[in-house]
Amino acid sequence: MSRVKAKKGVPIPMIIASVIFGIYAFSLAVPVVWGLIMSLKEPFDYFTDQLAFPNPLQFSNYVQAFKELEANGTGVGVMLFNSLWHSIGGTIIPVFACATAGYVCAKYKYVVCRVYYWTALIAMIIPLFGSMASSLKLSMALGFYDSPLTLLSGYMAVGHNFIIFYAFSKGVDWGYAESAFIDGAGHARVFFQIMLPQLTSPMIAMSLTVFISAWGDAQGPLVYLPSYPTLASGFYEYQQISGRNANFPVLFAGLLMTAVPIIALYIAFQDKLMSLNMSGGLKG
Image (cartoon, rainbow, N blue to C red; front, side, top):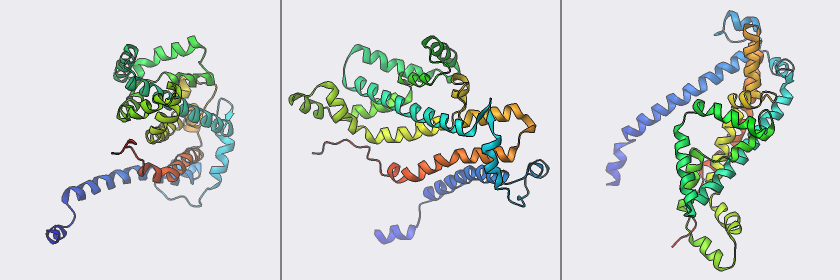
């Protein structure tokens, strides 16, 4: 039987899947390579022949990006700082909030938990633009608008992140908590010392995806933090204000530099992501 299987070679579905994913990877790489070429051109060459390879290579565009690119008087250095606290805070707060809410709703049979669960499901149905007006009005009413305090809105743990943690918490054996309760542990200790470590794998994966989303988010800072432009929102403002007068090679250089932290993050955690253990802890 093993010889017969060996002669069959690679299954056709696997070949088709490999070709499809290869084409998809190529489609993702082409814009990045094109942007890299554009970032090494002179402004005149960018408008005259975008398909030509830059000659000479203008590596000075990357240095020039720190000097020229700005949004409402805010330079790249400040935008980088805003991107860091916005992305880090916008990751830690909602991920922890969703993990906490998902655990409570999954393990405690209170009526309020069921109401919260169905509210989170309904919130997933409402389009982003449909809830933005009410979200903005609430942010102003709470005094969060145009303030770093707007990150606290991440504590409203609803949507698909909450549902993911709810599902993972459902799969964690309650025997851990019962054993701890017998030894005199309280609910807070059970959660932080026993249950939360069981959610480490989904928390890491969720944190990476949320951070990447927050780092590249231009709409959120534009709407809620107009005085704190990030790299994503700041470069967008620069392009919109400058129009065709913008130095596009320098802009491309700035955009590529913003992608460096995301690429470094993926390289650093790719093994961790591939080896994430999504299983529980009790073994028979």
